[in-house]
Length: 148
Image 1 (cartoon, one colour):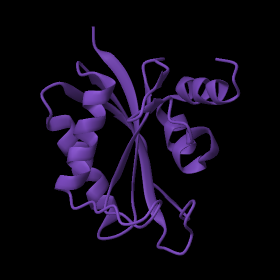
Image 2 (cartoon, one colour; image 1 turned 135 degrees about the vertical axis):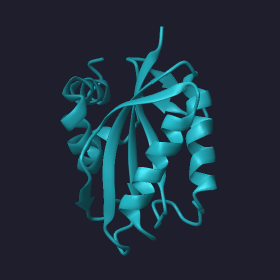
Image 3 (cartoon, helix red, strand yellow; image 1 turned 180 degrees about the vertical axis):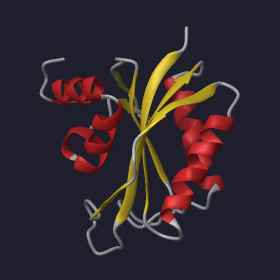
């Protein structure tokens, strides 16, 4: 049985909308990942480090046969292949792909925490995700409130 996962994508340098599209195409091209839904793109102010260009953000839903950690590895590999350079925390980026939730799994490891530990505080994550999976938004917020 395939797992369902929800990802948040963002970019604010280069051609952000084109890069979001490319990232989705790269994810969907993986033999064990199928993109099943995508939100519209929203433009938001930077979060955390605010002295940078606005971000284009969106969310996607996928079905996959790979584990959460393998999905994380593929997301990071995709970012690198698309020219992501990690110079500063929350700094400008060509692409950012975050796993927000993977089924209703809770996970705390040195590499990955699920649901995403900051998602409930970020409207640029919640608003696009609400468009494609409102029940997942509710669950992410419940988990953050400690009710999950």
